[in-house]
Length: 370
Ligand code: NAD
Image (tube, rainbow, N blue to C red; front, side, top):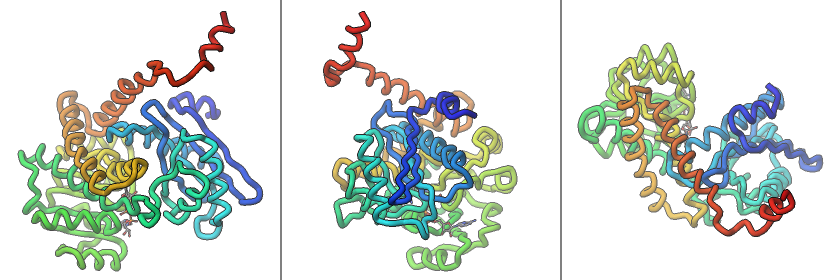
């Protein structure tokens, strides 16, 4: 599809190419929607098979961020950035500072943070050139690792699902399968264990599962067999596309609730398949929005207690999603999309109200027309 057609078809606002010979920077910034506030989204550094593939990814990620911020009740829009290159060999101070100059040039329309292939350290170079970056280290006033707040949000979201399924939000005695023993799981298991849940953890790396056992008691399971366990909750915290034709048929759980991004291999088909099987699915971008809530908080002067408090709202949001899904008899992933779109439309309308800040520029334009 031609670029402008592609932008129009999904209502993207802006696509920016940044190129600089001295630093070797080749970057793409996509801004999907700023009706709620400045676009916020990570910077990914990857080698793509083609520029078109990078554009496709940037647009997809930016749109996803619009929905995530909208449903989390944040006043941010959706954006994303891609630096085309090898994250192991092509990084330099010059590269990230040059990228920072381009972000600065957008004057706050886009705020970025670390993502796949970039680190807190890289963002600190970006920070030398612009204040429109978040997710920097605690030592220089940032919020540091978002995983504790993400994990807390997932825990709270699981409780909202439990309340719906079993009439109360207690997880004591519940069997919970945790796929992936990484950053988020390390904090998630502590909340669950402290409440008395029985845990089953599977990771492809033994070193990771061993680490989990330093914090909690859990049964270590074969990562290939985790879908077949007879449990109450299946919690994907590793990869995307883990909910597909094969795995949904194997699942033996009442609830799916975890932090991994893009869990449904096919949004329409697999959301419906879960509903038809009577499995309550907590949409990934709703339940994992603690990470976004955390970096958004940093922009107002970071306080973890405030970020945690904000993440508690995930309970109410998940409950709303479930309610709409039941009333309209639609899968939860479709219900959350509708709720996000409704907020974008309603709150977005405020930006059309003249607040006296735009001076004369637009008005003079109108006068000359007459
Ligand atoms: P991580 O890289 O620290 O952990 C992922 C773990 O999954 C690793 O230990 C890896 O070995 C394991 N893994 C990979 N393939 C696996 C497989 N097939 N079976 C079992 N385990 C496998 O990542 P993380 O920061 O814990 O994030 C987990 C997920 O949550 C990711 O999808 C991430 O995009 C998403 N997420 C994270 C945050 C955050 O704050 N870190 C926020 C929102 C969403």
